[in-house]
Image 1 (cartoon, one colour):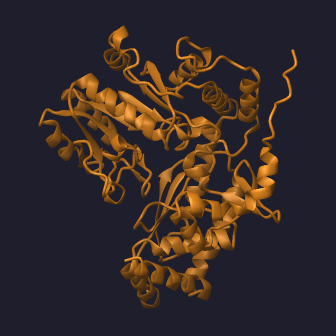
Image 2 (cartoon, one colour):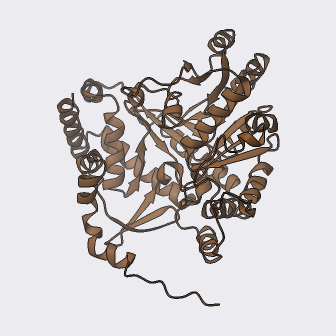
Length: 466
């Protein structure tokens, strides 16, 4: 049977052709008005026309290298043909989706596939985002243990909804949104601080990013396993937030797998599982936790999500995992990440403004620090006095403006650039980034006028915003 032609006059292509040029004005008028203002200020108000893999193109056909991956969402790059075809197929199948009173096959198949990478875990809850995956883990940990408090690490980022905000380690995100949940920060890697809190007897869990997205700080060797043993001794749970680090980002399927013997009770994933198309999050956990939460038929909907397990998201997730296996994406991320990190690390002794290169796989932090020479030190001091983090922004801007490479500062008030490119970047992309970064460092150390003039603009902007 041939599907009838769609009725109505809506034409998406025509709408974009007619009004696409208004994108910044529309955002200013109807959405977050500060975003276009910020983009105009730093010269990031580009108009990208199309994208594929790890690259964008503008209307003039100029190619841009994406080292941001939509904050990690585009693990397979943009518009991977296998994921794209899976979404066409699931739409064309006209499935009876989200009836709420049946069991469709795709959620079970995706859960089964995820669990092959998580052999010590048993069940999956599907939501719509990373922050929702964290919210689910917080709720499940509290209910399963009967305890109210969740510990988190200083400088952590776990999302911005109220529950996940309660375990966010940065005051800038929390200010003005109190009261939050009764949770407590402990320093990443500090087992004594963890033990002190556990002795109080009211801790349900510790939630931790194996590598923190803010600043790209890795948990110290042995910390996760020792923390797990402490938590279990006190009948508390370990929650691994793998929303950004999971699905191959760090060179293993999960970042916690870099450390032997670590088996979290709950694991949160999202971002790359979407294929860059359909929002999806997953909370993966042990059987006893799920059975405690869903303890009877009366509690069958005690935790649910209206769009959770929708067919498009499940198809995207299945396609992503299939591609990762077929193309050996995890191994590729490890090898390419080691190449990129080694090339950048070799520059540390060459440039005094470059302090450290750290990270795993294709999650790399480049930190800048106070230079030794008097001329550079005076300029560095000027920037620091206005606002910490301005030098890193001075590097990000010419990378885009002069070299057409999109990167990000790793967090507010940090002199760190974070590289989280699509996992499909190759050696040519590594060469392109390192050559561009080297040119920017040369400019900064030689007192390049354009770069430091932009620094003065940032200083004026920072002072005006005080």
